[in-house]
Every structure is written in structure tokens, then in C-alpha cells.
Length: 369
Image 1 (cartoon, rainbow, N blue to C red):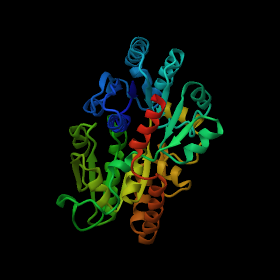
Image 2 (cartoon, rainbow, N blue to C red; image 1 turned 60 degrees about the horizontal axis):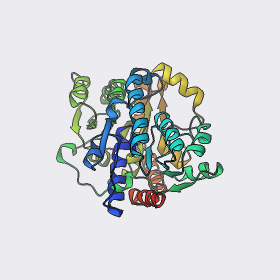
Image 3 (cartoon, helix red, strand yellow; image 1 turned 90 degrees about the vertical axis):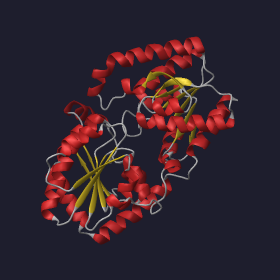
Image 4 (tube, rainbow, N blue to C red; image 1 turned 180 degrees about the vertical axis):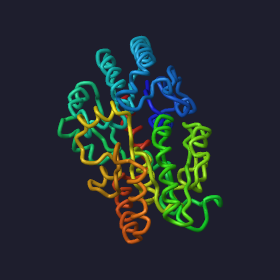
């Protein structure tokens, strides 16, 4: 049984399923996920689009489907008795399911750790009781779990299996041109895009007045309706190109990207693209986060690099004026941009080598045997 409550986990889970089937073609999978897991041959009992949430406040709007999904997962564990339960991130839900599996004697592997090293670190005690093996994708997570005597294996980041190194992607003609190109990456969820993109469009308009010939590109994620993005961009005064599913094209051509916090910042690091990390959440979610988060950075690039490599502008600091000032200062500082690119290469190296899914599959097969 495999549970991937969000789109990124769905993709990583699908790669893991493929890798496990290469080791044992007779394995059967079922659980909670999306289209990627379906394509990998998993019987998806609940679609993760019904239960994916962003922030504490947003949970309230999904409470009924979350409860239905938990009841079904509990029933399936009791009736089907899978040989292994694989959980991918999505901790509040997944740890409840892990508790059911533990009572039934079903081994639990957790792939892609919840960010308990950043907030709610007390959950590590629960993980120690409920999880047989943690499979982690960041090197600094190993020491965290070893300190608590939790069995742990670092496999590298699965992004490295699907993201080519910097300078190896051919750029499409519509992104070429004179002048500076800035990428606007508002997120892979509709909630994030509607919250962040209007500010980014305002940034584009401010920068267009300050810097002649500057261009902008928005790579729309497959999980977001292009019509929503075009509706926000429409009528603006900046030169903004909207493209679909072409994140890497934009990363390779852009001088700078303005990006929502998340895994996309690591994709930018692998591509060697300087960035400004911006993020806003609902006031209630931010109130909770301020009291629970215990790390000095929220950007994964800065966390992996263990220092402030790129700027972070969060909540009230993520105003169009602040972002524009920071972007202009970076664009006009060629030496500074070159140094950021050097640091981003070091971050990419810390993520390990390609083959994360294969190594995670070997851990899973070890538990099964």
C-alpha cells in the first residue's frame, strides 16, 4: 500500500513503484495518489486531489474528504493486510495511517520525510514508534534521525533522476531574445498561484518601468489551469510570455527567477539559476507557522546550503516594491549573480547522485524480504 497525498509525492511514488517492479515484477500496489501512480499501475482508491491542502487553515475546507480517505485506508489495511505500507510526506494524515498499520503488525517505510526538523520536531517521537525505516532525500536529515535512533537511509533527491544538469537543455525560440528574462514561478497549486501571481505581475510592471527591454515568462504547471494564469496576466503592461509545462526551458534561459518557496527552488539550483524566494499564506496559517517553525531559513536551497544563498521575502515582506528592489539589485550585479551560481552548484552536489528511486526501492525490498 502506498500513500502520496500531494502531486509531488505522486510523481516520486510512481518512480519508486517502477523501480520496485524492476526488482520484482510480481508486486501489486494500491493506495492513495494521482495520475502518476495510476500510470505506474497502482490501484488508486482515493484521488489525492480530493485531500491535498496547503497550510493549517486550509485543512478545515477538506476535513470531510480527509476523514473519508482515512476511514477507507484503515479498512483496507485491516482487510487486505499489505506486506508493506509506504508513506510519502503528507505527515498529519500519514502518521494516523501508520498508527493503524503498527497495531496490525504491517511494516511501515516513510519515503521523503516530513519537515519535522523545521517545525513540530516533537513528532519524531511518534515516528520512532510507528515507522520501521525512514528514507530521506536531504543529507542533513540523516543526523537528525540518527540522534533519535530512528533507522534511516539517505538516497539522494529524486529530482536528480528527472532534471538534467545546467546547460544541457535546448532552449525554445520563443524564450530567446535580447534583454533580461525573468521567470515568475508562482507555485504548482491553484491556491498558491491566485495568492502570489498578482504580486509577481505587479513586480513585472515595476521592473519594466525601471529596466528597458526586460521580459518575463511564466511556466504554468500541469496542476494549474492555464486560463487562471492568463486571466491574472491579462491587461498588464509588462511583456509576459505564458507557457505550459516548460519550467526547465525558463530556468535555463532566465537571468533570475522570482519563485514561490518549495521544491521548485531545488530545480532552479540544479539548473544553476539565481532566484528570489517569496511566499505568502493565509493569515491564520502564517500565525501558526510563526509559532512552530524553528529554522532560520524557509527556502530549501538555503536549508541545504546551510546559509543564506538567495534572498527570502515572506508574508508582509513579499510586497511588489520589496521584490522589485531586490530583483533589480541582483540583475545589475553581475559579480553577485556569478557567485550565487557557484553556490547553487554546491547545493546541487549536496543533493547526491541520480538513482534515488532505485536506492529507495532497494530499502523497500529489504524490508519485504
